[in-house]
Amino acid sequence: MNKKTGIRAQQADQTKSRILEAAVRVFTRDGYSGGRIEQISTEAESNDRMIYYYFGSKEKLFIRVLEHTYEQFNQAESELRLNLSTPVETLRELVAFIWTYYVTHPEFVAILTVENLHKGKHAKQSSELRRLSGEAVGVLRPIIEAGQEQGLFRRDIDIKHVYLMIASLCYFYNSNQHTLSSFLGEDLADHGQRQDWLAFISDLVLRGVQVQPA
Image (cartoon, rainbow, N blue to C red; front, side):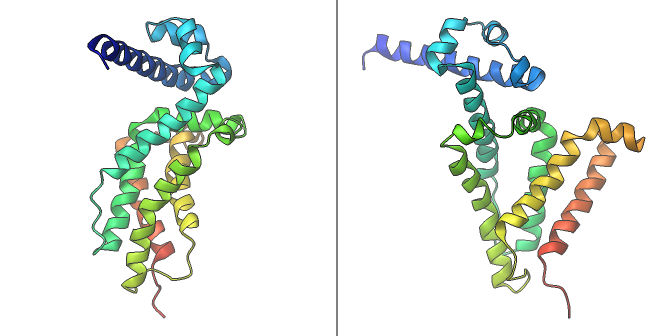
C-alpha cells in the first residue's frame, strides 16, 4: 500500500466513524423512525451519498449502530480484571460495572429501547449480535462456575437467567426513570437513589445465586 492509498483508507475510516457516531446521537435522540439520513450527514459533517456508499441504507446503518453499541459495552467489560478466587465480591463488581455503564451511557439504553419498539427486527438481521451477546454471557460464566466450585453458588442455576436478572434490574430503572420518577414522586436520577438501587440489586442477585443455609 502506497502512502496515498494509506491516507485515503484512513480518511475513509474517519468518515465512517463520524457517520456512525452521528447516527448514534440522532437515533438516540429521535428514534429510528424520526432519525433522518439528512440530519445524520449534517451532524457527521458529511453528505447523504457517503452514508449510502458506506452503509447502504438507513436500515443497515441502524443495524450497524446496534452492533456498535454492543461492541462498546463488550470492550469496556473486557477491560475488567475479575478475580475468580473471590466470586462473591467479583459478582458484585460485575453488577456494579453493568449498572454504572447503563447510567453513564444513556445512548445504550435508548438504542435498545428503540429496537424493542421495533420488535427486534433489525437485531434479527445482524449476524454479529449473537456473537456479541455470547461474549457478554461469557464474562459472567466463569464467575458463577468459580462460585459453584467453591460451594458458594447453587449448582441448579441457569447462566442465562442470571444474566437476564442483572440486565433487567439495571435496564428497567434507567429506561423508565423519567416516568417512574413522576409516578413515585422521587427523582430516580438522584445519585443517592441510584446508589441505593445498586446496593439493593447487588444483594438481590447474590441471594438469587448463593447456596442458602439449610
